[in-house]
Image (cartoon, rainbow, N blue to C red; front, top):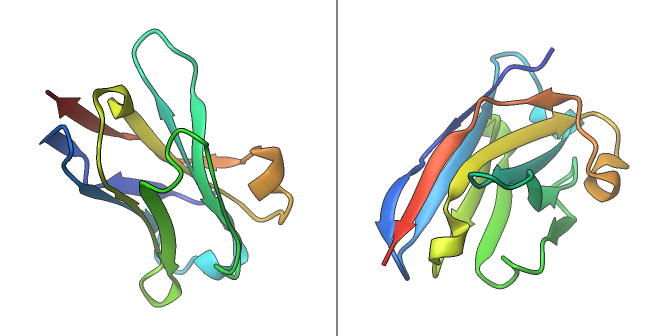
Length: 124
């Protein structure tokens, strides 16, 4: 198990920004895991948002957030961030981070470990 804790969610107006954090449990080397962000809006299926490779050198994004969101990692702090800019009402959802030791996870979007989620609400 890799306990993950998300934070940084909240309410923001259209066009605003938020930075989400995903922290791994103490003693876990995040450098050994692919980390992804997903979101789920009410009544909708969970969808992929962004992912970062174990080294941090490769990232991938959903088309809907490309050029607005940035995923990054700080291995020293065992934390992965999702910087969300130019937020839209359709970005409103519960955001989850996920981790997996397999390098393929970034492309397959299959992760073994999940956090509990943090709510992001964007209002106009």
